[in-house]
Structures are given as structure tokens and as C-alpha cells.
Length: 507
Image 1 (spheres, rainbow, N blue to C red):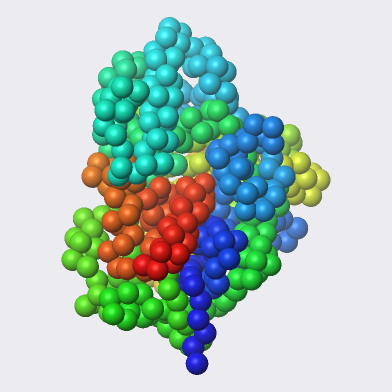
Image 2: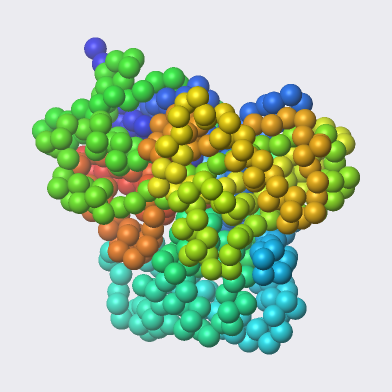
């Protein structure tokens, strides 16, 4: 007889683990099915020689301090996931060498505005106006998250009039409306690659919570890598009575009487009242569900949506310290162009893609690598399956050439010569991520979020989007909050609570 559960979670990535833990802590019988052999999938550290690399997290927003916790720390504490978060020293360092731009920005609203004024005299007034708009919009967004589609238009008009003017605008349109100078816009746009879309297309309401989360709470990393978070969540799930099956594939979702009834795995059939998918709807509706149960609206959504980022990441274990090499920053954004729309388009091809984000974990975590050494990760975005045209016999050669290009970009922009210090080298490409994460095109960012498919649209239709197939819901990067660790965690928690409510109500 097939085993029976209240909730089955497909995929133990960030959103999946939080969903499984939330459901288990609420007394439900939970099974998390993970196709890999580690909790958290790609969010697991790996070791090469004497270096333990962080494969996934750059930094986490909305953590805050113990005394003034942000949303993420508060949620993790409530789930019993206790992490000694380490604060990242600076917000970002932007380098556009072709334009002579080299600007380092701090956390803290006041400090951020003052540093912007230092680089761009006369900008403080407009920056204060912009930040005030962000604060009002963030409060309105919080209100809408609480009530979703049951919002009161009159309440919004009375309390958040400026938000209503900008809620559907792009980032660039808001920059223009506020009257921010062009040089300030270039600096403020630095985080565009964290969002997955250039500022001429990306919704302001996706940018606003991210920016304010960083400025008000700072950024943090787990000292024992993202694997620490995943492993602790896995243990909590098991301690709460849940199960996790590793090295297991979900092959089919079972439907009975128009409602989800379980899944078929390569280890057998499992019964369930609810299924939460921490994976792409393209995969779920394309290969896991009988076509007769796939709603027409989901087909239209699939045809209208576009996959967001994948990435290539060059991991370097260096046999010299940061100080010896002259490395000063935790995060540096290297861009070819001040026009990030042009930079975004350059991600559609491998050649001459010099849009690199470097992170040096040693700048935040003391003892992250052995004394006298340091680690660097160089991340380069990829779009539209730009790694699919390589013949298998050429793959290693192409990968190494691409890695060298990223390393030379770093060296040229910083003046830090690191090639002679490389002791350990590893690289992941979209091909790696596709194989390891079971995602189309190696996608890690879900779908592009803009216009009709932005965060407000998804938030207002979350009930509808997660009830088209009764009993089937989506968490993680493809959910309503989109990409990123924090967003995936929040998504998993919310979707699990929706499943808990549905089970209690017998839906």
C-alpha cells in the first residue's frame, strides 16, 4: 500500500525546505522529495583541496541584527533555524572602467544618501525624495501582502497616494518621475543584476523592497555557507516528524476527481492531500501532469513567460591573503556599460560578456579559508540558453576560456593580479546547473518579472494562481515573489500556510 502524507514537497531547494518545515511544525505529515543527495540542492557548500566554497549565496537581505531583526531573521527564528549571521561590510562597489566610474556604497539610509552626495554633489535632495517614495511604497506593499486581492482602494488612496502613481511603473520611469540625475541613476541601478532584468523593463515594486531591505537591514551571510541553513532546516523537518527522500525523482502527479492525490516517484507511489512544487511550472505541467488536467490558463502563461537568468560561476581558491593580493571588497559589480539594458542584452551571448560580480567571502567571514589564503567567486549572468551550442568535446575548452575572460576582467578593473595565486579552480555553467538542479536552461531565477507578470500582479492573483489545479501550489523562485534566497524562503512559508489552511478546511 502506498504511503500517505498531508503534504508532499517536490524539490528541497530553499522554498521547498521552508515549505516542508512550516507544514511539519504545524502538525502535518510531510514528505520532501529531493532529486539530489544533499539538502538544499544547489545551496550546499563544496570542498576543493583546503577550500570550502559557497556555491550560491552572495548575500541575504532583510536579516538585521538580533536586537532589530529583519523579516528573514524573524521568520527563521520562529522556525527554529538559528544562524549566527555575519554582516557584509558594504552595500556594493560599482566599477565601469570604460566610463571611469569607481564608487563604493555603504549600508544605512543616511550613510547611503551622504555617500551618493559625495560622488554626485547636489543629489541629496532628490535622493531623500526617492527614499521617501520607497518607504511609502514599501508600507503599501506590506498592506497588500496582508490583504492580497481584498484591498481597499479608498484606504490606498488616503494613505499611499504616491505609491498609486508609481505602482505599475518601471524603475527607469520612477527615476525619471523623481528627477534623479543620470549619474545617480547609474549608481542606483547597480543591483539590477540581482533582479534579473534591466531597469527599463523591471518593475519598481520589485526593486523597492530589495533596495530598502539592504539599506535598512544590511546584508548578511551564514558563516558555514548556505549548506548550514539547508542542513539545519533538514534536521528540523525530520525532528518535527517529517521525511526527506534524497536521490528521488518525481515522475508524475496523481489526479483523482479533479484534485491532486499524490505523486509517483522512482521509488514508488505516494499519496498526498497537497503537493507543493519548488520547481518550474514548465516542468510540472510539461512532464509531471497528464495533459488533460493542465488548465488552459497555465498553457497561456507558459507561452507568455520567459526564463530569467542562469549563471556561470568561477570559483577560485587563492594561496595568498586578500591583503597580499590587494583585494578590499566583499562585492564588486563590474559592468561593460552604464546602460544596463545594453548590459542585459549582452548576457544573451558568451562572447565578450564582461558583466561580472565578484564576491570574496573572506571580507565578511573571518577564517573562511586557511590563513594566508582567500576565495573569490566570479558570477556572470546568462540568458536564452546561451550555452547550448557547444559540442561536448569542446565544452571544457570553452569553459576554461570563459573563466579566463572573467578572471582577466577582474584583474583589469581592480589591478589585483590573481592568476599566479590560483591553487584551486572550479567552474559551474548553465549546463552544470541544468544537470544538477533539473531546471530548463540551468535557470535559477524563475521567470522574468515585469509588467503584467510583476510582483504586484502575482501577489494579487496568488490565490487564483495556486488553485487552478486543486491541491497543487508553487514555491521558490517561480512563485509570486520571484528569485533570490530571501524571496524563496518567504514564498515557501506563505505557500505552506495556504496548504495548511486548505487541508484544515477540507478543500
